[in-house]
Each structure stands twice: as C-alpha cells, then as structure tokens.
Image (cartoon, rainbow, N blue to C red):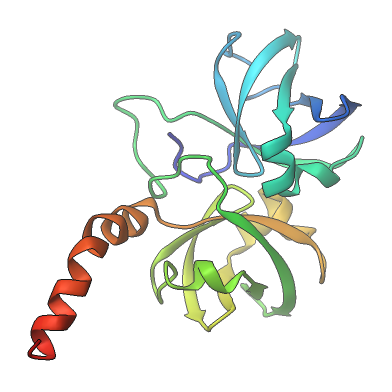
Length: 207
C-alpha cells in the first residue's frame, strides 16, 4: 500500500525488452537506501517488486499485463519517474489509500500556469469517470491529488510549486500519457452495492 506522496524523482537507466515483458533498472538513491529484494516500490504509480539492487539502483520485472494497462510501455533510458516506497506501519498517512494498481491511462489536455499554482486538465476513459468526484482524491503517475472539477471524460487538478518541483508532473507536456488510479473505496462500494441496485429500482418503480 502507498500514500501517493512521492519521495523521489528517479531516473530510468536501462530498459530490457523481453518480448512479452520488460525489465527496468531505475536510479533512486533514497528509495533504495533501505530496500531489500522483494520489496515494493511504486514507479509512476505502478507497484513493482524489486528483483535486484545495485548501489542506488533497483531492477524490476514488468509483465505484459502491466505494459498494456500503464504508460510504462513508453519509458526509455533517461526518463524521469516518480518513486515511492510502500507505506510503513505507524507512519503519517499524508495522501490517500493507493494500491499501485493502475486503473487506466489518461492524457494531459491543458496546463494553465498561475503565479503560485498550475491548473492541469487530464483526459480520462469514460469508464473511470464515475469514480472521480469533485474534491475527491485521484492518483496521477503515483501522485496523490485532489480533484478540482470533473467532466464526463476529464478532470482538473491544481498543482502547487512543491509538486511541480519534486515530481514528473512538472515536466509532463500536452499529449503526454499518465497513469491513473481511482479511489479503491469507491470501487468496493460499487461492487458491494450493485447486486442491490436492481431491487431498489424495482421497489421505487412499484414493481
């Protein structure tokens, strides 16, 4: 489990194409300082397992399913990435509940800079829109953010200077693909309530 509070902006140092998978080697001195083989590290919001450690770098295998569902299929040597270690028991929970299980990808549609913040609009698949609410939480490339506005296939977030400085969201351009993870609580509520919605609708209709 993660909080969506990015600890470090790392760098991809090698990408090995394994036909139906990939092996990423990433430099991240902070997140590897106490890492062990088998630990989880979120890379742009994607939960990956450490399989090798070498000084300030770690290596993780990325399966085909992950490559299909996330933007990790596009990363290349030298690309910056957001890194976060798994949440520690007893630590402050600064963001929201993040699993590192990406629900889909979105696209940066526009950026409106201001003196002290920047408003960013992100296009998203319509199937995810029902989980996104104004003032709710969403994870964009592993960054826990508060939704400002939401439409049928887009939402906006306001980025403070610190977020722009320490994460890759400060350098993402129009048209760039980003990983999205919606609030897991909303998905559980929908799953639990869905069997009963039909019965309620019939009762309201007097059937």
